[in-house]
Length: 365
Image: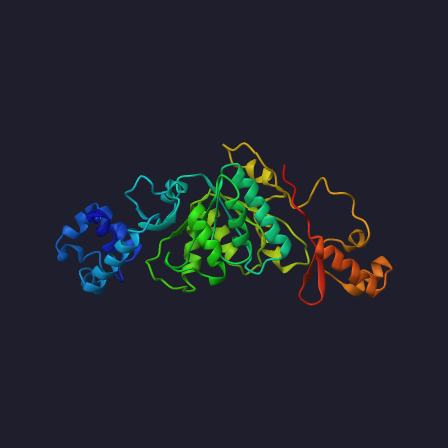
C-alpha cells in the first residue's frame, strides 16, 4: 500500500521531539494542513518552533520514526485519526487541548459513538469490581460505549463489562499503543483490540511514564458524555478524571460506599461537591438523553431473599471473626465454617487483616 503523504506529514510533525501538541495546533492555525506547514521555509516556522525542535524536524531520526509508524499502520485494524479526519471524535473537539492525532487498534467505528467513562481505584474491593462490571454491562447494553484506562481494578472490570454489550469499550492508554501496561492486563488488552478499541495519543514505543497517565485522563473524560467513579481514595487518579470531566462540562456520577472504607472517601467528596449519587444504571441513564434503558444494574439486589444466619448480623462494612462471634453468638469454629460456605457461594470475600465483607449481587433486568 502506498503511504499517504498527508498522513506522513501529520506523523512528521507529531513525532518531532520538542514540537508539542500546542505548537502543532498553532502551526495548523497559521499555515493550514501539515503538508502546507512543511512546505514553508524553516525560517518562517522559527517564530513558532523552538530551535532544537526545528533542527530535529527534518532529521533522520524523525524520518525513521515516521517509517516505523507507517509500518505499524500496515497491520489490519491499526489506524491513525487526525484532527482533519471526519472520524475524529467530535467530543474531543470540545475540550481545551485535543490531541492532533490518535493511534487506534480495533474498531474505529466506536469513535463517534456516545460514551460513558467508568473509573476507579486500582486496589479495588471485590464489591467495587463487581459494581463496575455490572454497571458497565448494563450501560453498554443500551448502546453507550464504556471508556476507561486499562488499569487494574475498576478500569479492568469496566472494560470487561463493556465488552458484553452492544456499546463495547474503549481503553485509553498512557503509553504508546504498541505497549500494554500493566502487563497483567495483556489478555484483556488483546480482547479489547479484537472487540473494542485501544486508543493512544502517544507515539509508538512510549513507555509507562508517570506524568503521562494524568494527561491521558482528560481524553477518558473528553470522549465521554459523563464520568462514573465507582471507588476512589481521596488521593486518586480517578478524581483527576472526574475533575477533567467537570471542567469539560461532562456529567459526574459517583457510587457511595461505607463511611469506614478509604475507597469511599473520594466518591463521597465528589458527591459533596455536586456529583450525582447513583445506585443503579438507570440513575445514570436518567441524566443522559437519547438512551432507552434495556438493562439495569444496582449496587444491591431488589429480589434477593431476606438475609439469614451470619449475613443477617454481618452488615455491609468489613468485620473480623471475633466481632461476628459476638454478634451471632457462635463459636469461632462455627463462624469460620459459615464464612467458608458464604465465600464459596460468592456472598462474602476475605480482606487483608483478617477481615471479611459481604458481596452484593447486582440485579439486572
